[in-house]
Amino acid sequence: MAKQYSREEIRQRFQQEVERGNPIVIPSAGIGISAKFAEQGGADMIGLFNSGYLGLPLVEATSLMPYGNANDIVMDLGNRIFPVVKETPMLGGIIGSDPTREMTPFLKIMRFKGFSAVINFPSPGYAYGQHRRNLERNNYGVQQELKVMHTARELGFYTFGMAYDEEIAMQIAGDDHDALVLGLALVEWEKGGARLEVAVAYINKVAAKVKTVAPEMLLFVQGAPVRTPEDAQYIYDRTDVVGFLGLNNMDYGETPIKETVAAFKNTRLKG
Image (tube, rainbow, N blue to C red; front, side):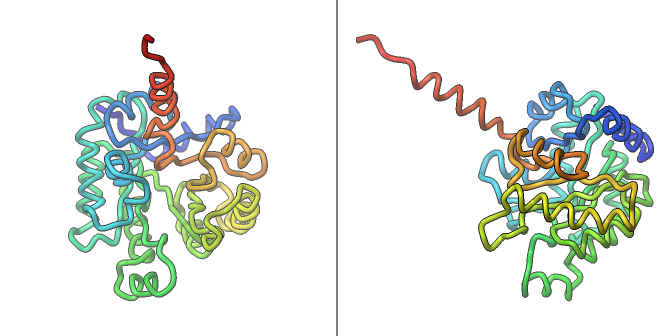
């Protein structure tokens, strides 16, 4: 059974890693074996998200579609994955604007189950334009989920605030959360996603403002263009980011699967 940690214990664990010069790496897990190998690989925390559950049998980018209730999926993943995780803290991705439940009792159940941290993912912050305005106007938007994240902090969770834009990043910074995750998916979205150098400029711009409000807040990144360890190193070398949240990158085993299949295919039949 996964070990549960207090907010302060996680703060201390993360701070020790940063002081040693080690990045904080949080992969996702959609099945037990992914979580098992992530722990063996030295993950600082393991994230359970509906994207892991949907992405493994389907494709990426399904987490924001109405194919299932994200909060139910995370709890189901916990039942499957917690038994194989020994010491690593567990992070649950929740959608606070869920109209089908009272979120405070739900968060208390998450604490009882063993989750140590939560993050507002999947987030309506990924929406933009009229769709985003409609969500906010009907209390299904980012403002509602930030209220739930505030409750999670009061209940003792270590809280990650996911922000896809500067405005929400500043709100998260002002609400005493432990870490800010800068989602890079919408940076230069009209051009098909940010390049690494554009991402660095965006991160440094937002970080400079965030640090004036919350100087101790840890900064993480998530999303394209950070897909490989080399990409992450590029970000670490040029920003104050201390960690990476991998919603998909490390759960699929894409490279070893491709290499193994290719190796079998490259054998030859006799004659």
